[in-house]
Image 1 (cartoon, rainbow, N blue to C red):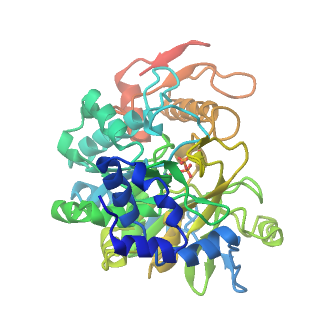
Image 2 (cartoon, helix red, strand yellow):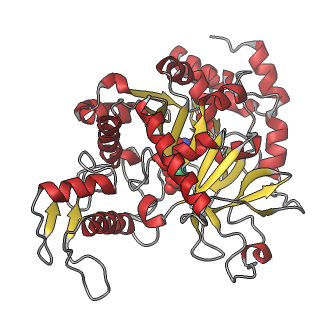
Length: 473
Ligand code: UTP
């Protein structure tokens, strides 16, 4: 098979003709596969992309008018605010009952830090039972559907690398008790990996080195996959967005949803008070009247350490990547069939084949992967809303095997949260000298969605927990 002259010209003018080095040695099927991958790349835009992001290091410009973002605090500050929170929670419940909300989990990441062989959502995180991340969400989604009398649809974004394994896992587990039609899997786009010399890398003779295009790819993938149309048909206009590695998240939160609606927000965000100036969370900021997130690595130290008159960090609002997104907002952003969010550069060790067809497994970073981030859509929204939540209630990221944001810390937080809920419902929890629960407790997310459910559970059963016990409820 001959390569099309249009594609060949495009490669030549972008300085990427090395990608055809093995063309004549390939079988017809292999040629077709490579041509298919190449046709998806915008070679006209590539030289500028390589100049700005690979050959040069992009710098995030910090605007002069950058200030901390306003937010609704965890505890209302006045009677008027308390009444507003009450109205918001009621509104959220109404919207849930009316089926206006759907869930979206981004699960297309590669989870390299966890080093787990398989999609991250299949990781057994349950402290006692080892129930998987996906199972936590699925069971909470079922419970929420029962509680609000309207089944929730669940949109799950995968990548080309983990799609088949993810769907297979759900099928083998009977969709975790959900109806198959409640779940909609869709696959995000990819970006080619680029070597430090500005040349795209080949993973094999007939395959490019491709990786998922970042969670910012969600927006376009929602359109391309038909997910937006499906949501519209179902009558869902608020998307509850969360990451696959946070089993503590409220899959839907009535207060957050209601405030999003009352504020007529197009994109809302949960915020946590940072534990220190340099905690590795994106910082909620405003500039030119627009909400934006500045990554922890980009916020200048003098701003990160700045404190208000009350001694609190000025830029105290950190992002756990939990959002509500208005479906119409995504429709508008992607109406042209494309969406340009800024790229973020990550230096990586990228396995590839060299000019002799030899496999290379680098020990040091040798190139760049480019990703777009969902939070870069915030400044594009006309109206946004940020609301503070208690970290212990909503955020237990599973990024690493041990240490900070790890399997260990996540399991501990799950136990702490369940223990706290039971205690609030009148159950005695044995505690160690340091105050942590002296028992491994795991409450089924199928039974308990919130504090109210925990109260019901505690009233229905005589729960007695002995020191050191493993308890599954
Ligand atoms: P992370 O930034 O933690 O990346 O993703 P990761 O790929 O999962 O893990 P590392 O950095 O390789 O260790 C945060 C969330 O965004 C999703 C992930 O699945 C996770 O839920 N994500 C990330 C995507 O869906 N697609 C991407 O391209 C990147």
